[in-house]
Amino acid sequence: MNFLDLIFPPRCGGCGREGVAWCDACAARVQPQPLATLNGMPLVAAGRLDGPLQQAIHTYKYRPRPGLASVLGELLWRATAASNLELAALTYIPLHPQRRRERGFNQAERLARALAGRLAVPLVGGLTRLRPTPAQVGLSQPERQVNMLGAFEWAATAPPPRGLALVDDVCTTGATLTAAAEAVARAGGSIGAFVVLARAQTLPALAVTLPGQSTCP
Ligand SMILES: [Zn+2]
Image (cartoon, rainbow, N blue to C red; front, side, top):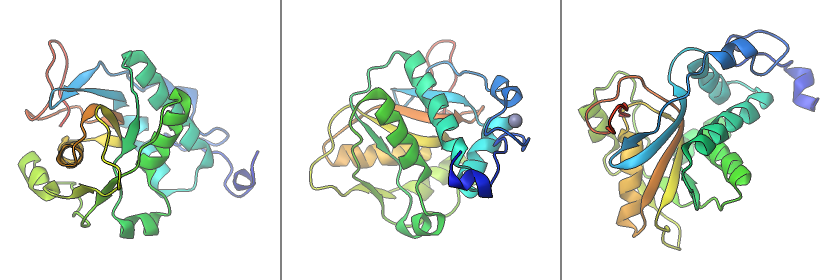
């Protein structure tokens, strides 16, 4: 038990039950997602953006629950392993510096760092968010795409490698992942796969379709 456990006793990130960071009942409600595609690239998701997983991701971002980071990292790693994709290096969706200061950490970076450790591949930082984008909630897919246009830039001195896997916590319309992938491409690299904890159930036309599979916006 670490120090924070004494201040914040473990509580399930999905349902609030005391005693564990993630209870068996919530774990059982995460439905593994088939591999989808976004803009022609594989999209790995550990589950759907609903129920306990959605709640756990929200809790992870806004409340101090030290145990939840490893739970979600484990979910992400399992989904990645099940996809059989060979990921050579990871990068992540950045927060605008102002929001990162407010939150104290970037949830996508933490997830990517944990996954990179499990996969023993490099984590390559370089994407920056050029402006604070308004919240996407409530926007249509076209509005989200406009909202995200030019939101990212690759700011590292070294250009991004090709075939990077891009990590974020959620994929709702795919607009954020798409805008970030475009920034990587502008800098001479490429995204070879997208990896998220959860994706929305209904994914617009922009994205996904392999036979028998669904789309991620
Ligand atoms: Zn629970």
